[in-house]
Length: 255
View 1: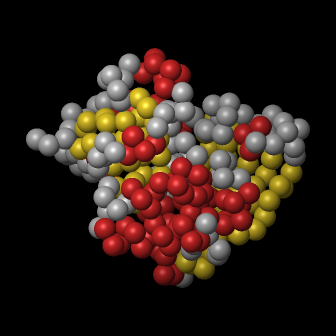
View 2: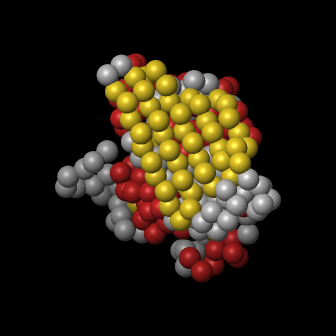
View 3: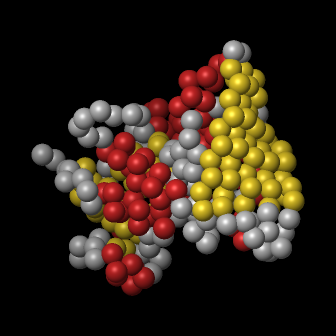
C-alpha cells in the first residue's frame, strides 16, 4: 500500500495533537515537521531528517497533504502554491479574511482538483450551516474570553469588537479562527456578525452561534477551559478528529 505523505507547519499545542493522531495511521508517512527551531521539538522523537526549519526544503519532499498549525501568514504564504500539487489543511482560518487570498485558494483548488480543508476547531454544527446556506438569513457568533486569551491586557473588560467577521479575523488573526470557520461555512465573511467580549479572569473560552433562516432558528453554545494561551482544551481533540476524517478509515464515518 502506498503511504500518504504528510507534512506539518508548526509543532505547538495543535501541531502536537495532529502528530499524535498521524502516528495512529499506518498509511501515513511523515515527511516534514517545520519548526523555527528544530531543537525545540527534539522531545517528539521524530525520524532523522523529518524536523526542519527551511520551508523550501520541506516543500521539496513531495507531501500529498500539508497541515498548517502555526499562524495565518503561513496559509497566505504557502497554501496557493501547495494546492497546485497537494491538499492543504489550515487551522488558521482567519487567513481567508483576505478576500484576494480566499479567491486564490478557491480558484487554485478548483483548477488542480486538490482540497483545501478548514477544520471546525472549537465549535460544532458547521455541517448544518453549510447545508442551510441558501436559506440562511442571519448568523451571529459571540466569543467570550479573557483578555490574555485575546492577546490583550488581562484587565481588559467588555465588548472589544462588533462587526463583520472579516474585520474580526483581520484584527484578531490568532484568536478567532472559529469566527472564520463559522463565516466560511455559512453566510461568508461580510454577512456574518462577530462579537468579541473580554472577561477578566475567565478560565474558559465560550462561543455562542445564533442562526436564523427560512424555517429554522438555532442557538449553538460551546465552551472549553483555556490551556493558558489562545487555545481551548477541546481544540486539540477537535484537531485530531478533523485529521482522522481527512485521512479516512474503515467502519462507520460521521463527516
